[in-house]
Length: 145
Image (cartoon, helix red, strand yellow):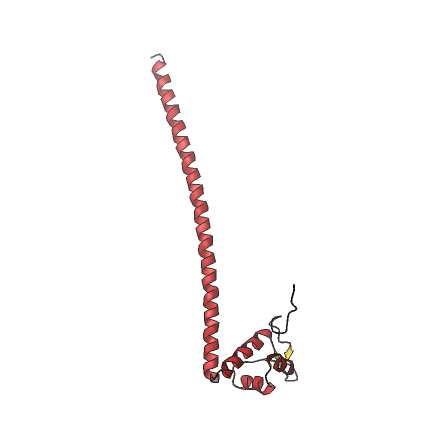
């Protein structure tokens, strides 16, 4: 079953008008204007001065609305959102670090295997040289003097 993408999950292109954004978020346009005025959310402006919102901006406005609805001030809501953003980045960085660690471990295992193969070849070569030296020593004892 496939779901159709909504305006909230398509792109970061600022293509959603204020009226459409307000309907999607179930807020009044004045709420979106107040976020712009407060410098919390800065939508793209058309040449005619109309606000256009990206999916990311709509998600941020929606989260701010949730926080404001449970009693947070705009300052605390933006602080919480900033901390949530930081946490999200930290999770992403941790994920990247775990991936890098796992790749480094895999490379180390590959190099350990390669080293083991080289050691085995070296051991075999050492045995062969010993055998040849032994044969030379035996042959040398039989040569006329």
